[in-house]
Length: 171
Image (cartoon, rainbow, N blue to C red; front, side, top):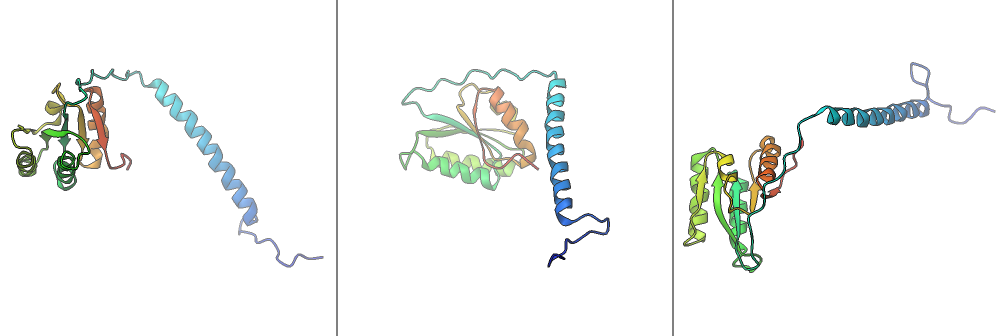
């Protein structure tokens, strides 16, 4: 007896079910080979992971010294959010350093941070690596464009800083 719904065949003669099974097996093989390939690539990389510098000491009642790298729209908005923490009794945070290659944005963020933190000096840097060289910073927020996030995060971790990166580091 003939089935009421005959199997559909592609121009090559395989059914949809056969095609899906074949595609799934190829995808699985690709995943296995890809994992094996990435292991061998990692094993060939002889560059050692650098040891992180020691963190800045932080006592129980000491303010958390934060820095922001990238003072565009999101970086400056994060500055304002951090500056509200002491008022909201969430954390004793002080923004003490900013870095950006764009001087007008850097100066705007410095003014906002200085105005909200009377008596706190907010240092500015055109090169984020100079900011990371400071030994009094506890944390760094990275608000730069996405293609810089990975390098800046690695450098900050190696410098002994806690790091907050909001955007995904994948493109």
